[in-house]
Length: 387
Image 1 (cartoon, helix red, strand yellow):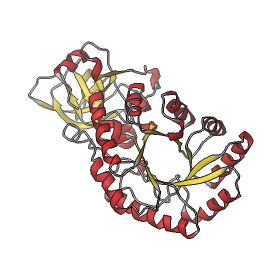
Image 2 (cartoon, rainbow, N blue to C red; image 1 turned 90 degrees about the vertical axis):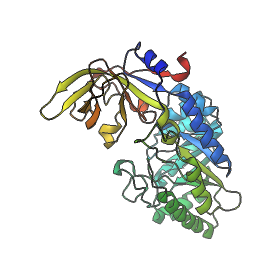
Image 3 (spheres, rainbow, N blue to C red; image 1 turned 135 degrees about the horizontal axis):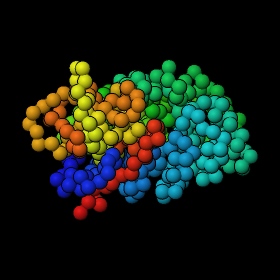
Image 4 (cartoon, rainbow, N blue to C red; image 1 turned 60 degrees about the vertical axis):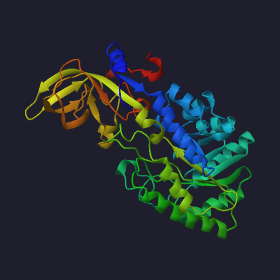
């Protein structure tokens, strides 16, 4: 996404900070995603945790995607936004009783279960409500996603999923239940995965696990391989759409399916990240001991990824015409030393009032915003509203 002069002129009339979504780029991404998945008959669920902005969700829904939800409120949001209940999946390691009840009453497609105890609780609640329940068991495959340790989810030391040595108990639980129907197996090894070899390794492990179920005459209808496909945070203008072609081709080549099986994907970041930017203004430029501080009116309350994961986001000064370069620590206004977007970043000489763009903020930006320090929660604007 490249900000046009018309858009910049419009930005200068608005109070900052705010989120800016390029709806054309979102549609371009969805066109690529859905057309590549269609080649293999793959089913897509959008991971709500990445972004739940109403305009973004409405656009995604029009492309026929289902919903991957990790809370009761996300399930309800999906239903309210028009995602079909029979295409809603409820995942998450800690589902409360109230969340389970609400999802059952909405007749969603499937619960992705992460422990035998969770299955027993769902079974008990479903019995009380006289409901039949589809479940998929989330299996921890012990596959390294080669990503940041805080967003790796498929290793044995992670809290997610059921280990294979517990799988006999899973099968016994389902056999003993009058309400539970085991329709699928579910995997998600991590997020912001750029080494696609990790997905090949996942396929090999899934094939082995499929053999385990087949040897016990347990029929699996759905193989849900999760999501986690990364984006290019360093070159967002030139690589504005993720490589869905290569991504799906790996699963087509290496995943060994049984007759009639469906493959489901749960993608979030790669769908929405590049279409969103955080737009801010320079409040002050302050000379420090060894660096200059560019102090913005946006901070960790608007985009927490750099502080939480030491994540890189490309930062542009949209208004300066200066040729001379200076080195800045780009920081926010929050009373925390960690409220820092970038250190020792080379940018054109910047001044109070300059408009700053922090790119690739469409995923885990607005959705993770907070009002810490009683900061205002800010709204969004959209490319197709700028005439």
